[in-house]
Image (cartoon, one colour):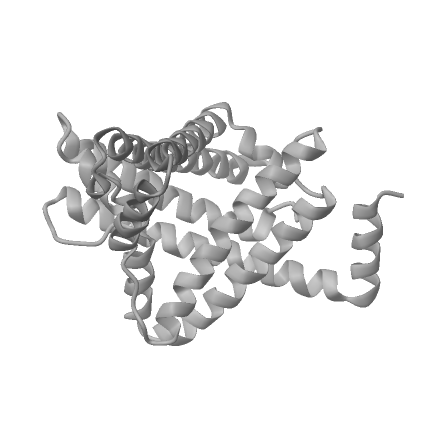
Length: 269
């Protein structure tokens, strides 16, 4: 019996497995709400309305909803629980669709970091503070560039983000995300697949643009170019037919949000 199987058996016998899985599913729901609002904010920017099109802006918008403070606390618990679940999955090589243990561990660890970061942002707003990811990104980029070899490090970070974005686009286009879910049959399954395709491709585009901006900042030695998700989405507007592209990305992010709601129910965890 593998270590991962032993851990799962021990957790099931203590009841911890069921509790943690329930909390982890609430993390997918929280992620869905964030992406739903991210898409809405992106569309507002495309229509020339002022908005912060990043996770901080989305979470701030959630806090302004009726019962928003309580919802932020629920989201915080869910996001941290999902991050913890993924760390356990990374440590013991459980979960994931790859046959290679190290790939499963690496993917789970990367996802854990992302969800824990969202949890920290949600906690910040739940405690009544605020966060601006764009200014934080610029400040962090300046610090990296000031290090020996900082230009290379920042370019490497950008290339990693670009790679992640391209991976997400491929995952959506090839529909490999279906392995992560116990997809229902019939029309419901087809709808889930369409939402996943649109969502992964849109999010992949956004993350890839973030990576490109980091590489540009490294090449030009200008940390102001590394503006994070907010700057990446707003940079799309300057492209030919940029507003149309950004609306399409916004719709895709909203689709990813709905897909995350579905994932909260059907995820293989």
